[in-house]
Length: 161
Image: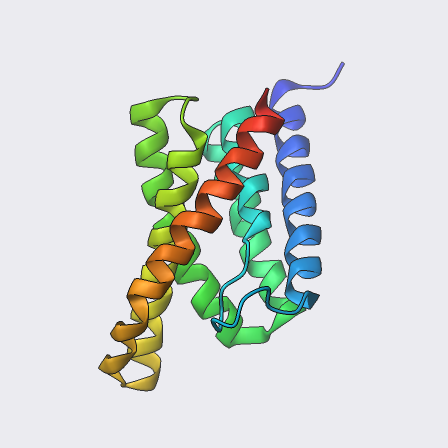
């Protein structure tokens, strides 16, 4: 009989692997709209579902693994920097909302996660480039974050059911 901790760790590793596969595939898909950097973020649906299925600690392990390994596969240190900043803020805010809303309204959780992910990435871009004017790009990314985040939340909610 498998120990419960081993079972949870194994499931977290499976979620990490699934999110990593989706992340790598999505990185190879050409942009769907002419706004640089906007992607559906489908790997985040896997992370959100992991949160619902396993809870915060195992989901954070799956998330961290995807960020670290995904950056190695899709772009190195710069990809890690942007992905980690966006992912950490997004995951932190997602956890707060998840604790307030519970398992309901996954599209809201996803939308807020998408917006905070984009906001953190804009912040990193400003710091890295020393170009504060990049903030002007934020309104477009907020709209994109709401749409793509709600979409990934809906996917996680459908899978959850």
